[in-house]
Image 1: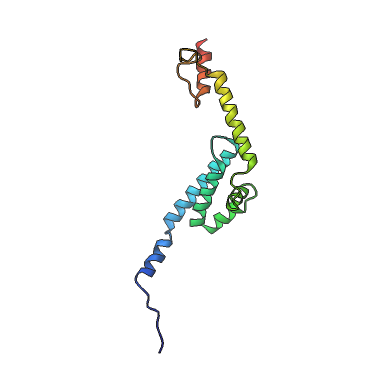
Image 2 (image 1 turned 90 degrees about the horizontal axis):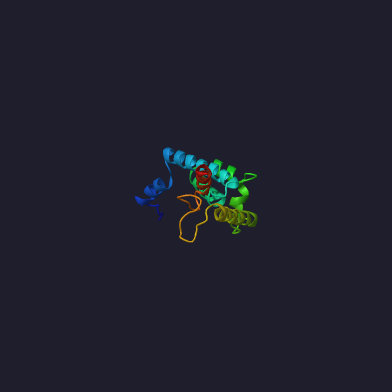
Length: 144
């Protein structure tokens, strides 16, 4: 007596759900590429987080293109961030220290250029907060 495997109707549907169509794959590759470009900017700008953007880009590449995922994880400069995360190391210590120093420097600049008097009014400009102190500097210079 021989038994035949009976395919249920849910098996082909599950395969279709796992496979992405060409349009979705292209969109994921484009989104991943944009994230890689932003993360490269994040290496030089402390405002943009490098490692989380690269991890998200690697996730999108893993779902859409093995070639792009392999390129990103084996990249000489960017692959280090992803491998550190996969090994449980997280963000490198040097990057953490650099980010903290730049944040402290930002607040130091705020304390110099956007201080308030005892009444709570801005003395250097009408509107000043931690995100636009350069605007305040320009406005204070133009008022003189």
